[in-house]
Length: 387
Image: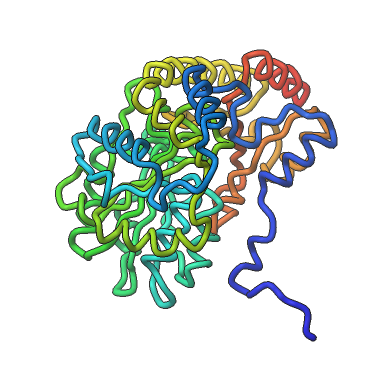
């Protein structure tokens, strides 16, 4: 019998840069600033709620759309933006935002459709578009006015009669940019004019810095009924391993996403869902303290990277800061990233792996600052050896 062979559309996705860099970090006992996960736990009240649920009998299948108390808490949380969602028909709990994005693309796009993706993009986006059988059409961010900005003219030019959806991530991984109201209004105008679905990845919604503000695309005129708003608990409450995410959308869009999602994981995280409900209702002050702490960590790492000789790019949100490696005499950040764990004992991720046009992004390296201060300081001490 012929051996199974991976279908061509998934062959580019057999491994992830995160797994590869983490393996290198472990091999060389390097400080891992490559993968974006914190090294401290979330709020004690949330952890206590999880323990109570775990030992309180909440260990069987939760309802398919998610536990009612979690869906109600998500609805209350979205009210902070002025958008009301029915917890029974307009909210779906998923196995993290990654599943929510994949299920949305599988449910809402198909062969022959195009999905516009902003470059650089989180690596699961390309794989999810491929799993849906659709084609991605990338539009690159541009460095303008001291930030990574949305190229609105290129975005307009990318829309064709085959375009079905736009996938938007703000606050943006890996660049750390936060899209402005004007940029999002341009996206909304395109979606309304061309009858497009918007899929928004908002997992860093609470992690914005300085005077930046997270503005959900669904709040703009004409977007409530055509936007699949996606977020999760992992980044807001330091529980990335729990994989509790959600979709907020119109009943028709939620029903479509659920049709795909129920045959991927069916359900997940039963005893964790009450804990996330508790966190959304009671732990947002903790999340605000986290935001303040991360802003300080961003500044701490950025200053250290600059001192080590990198040209640091500004970041307005997320866990990440990007740097230009050329001032240190390197042309390709990927080559440096592969050398760093052994050379100085630090792991980072090259931005070009998140793109379709690696030559345009090959000078940028991404570091995560969602770590304890002593970890950041140790990484900086090691990186200074590059000078």
